Length: 245
Image (cartoon, rainbow, N blue to C red):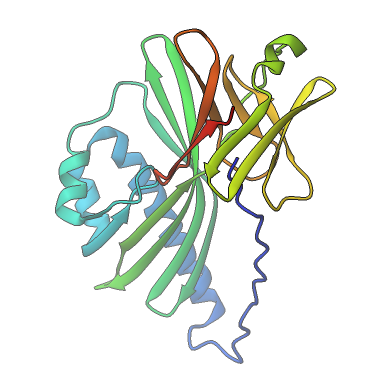
């Protein structure tokens, strides 16, 4: 199983000796920008492009959280012209605004509520935005979001079922994943790892590692024997491992 090693990044704050903008003006601008943020996410589910073009700067770049693709203002407006299904709404919270003269940096958490028939569900994203002040109005010039993943709920599989997945899986000739059964849990230990990751079942043949890694789906042949697994990451990277004899 391919795992991403956890990374710890130290963030350092840059303390400016003075600000060219008075504190009261910063607070006022922060409130105005926060209102623009709410205006944006209120207009989106209505498909209100007349409202949106007032918020969008001409050189807007919008990066999608689902695909990582970047779109320009005409593409974004065209995509939002058709309203989503009835009942859709975008809630924003934890809005934090930092103003630096005519530039405002925004961070927020966005919760999308969707309706499919009688069933509703939601997705959450972290959003970073940049606004610029032009002719007395704050306009959005950059938008980037990343999904906040949910931890899939586990299912119960007995030891006999789990034992079918025990084996050695070859990702590359020099990279073998050894899946063993320890007690009532599968543990995957790849080449070079001193400690393996517990594989937590989330479906009959799908498991998520307890560390940092994407879920893996085991494959079977026509006779029902496990022949390997597939691990797919959000960026589209796919790792395939064949089960060794």
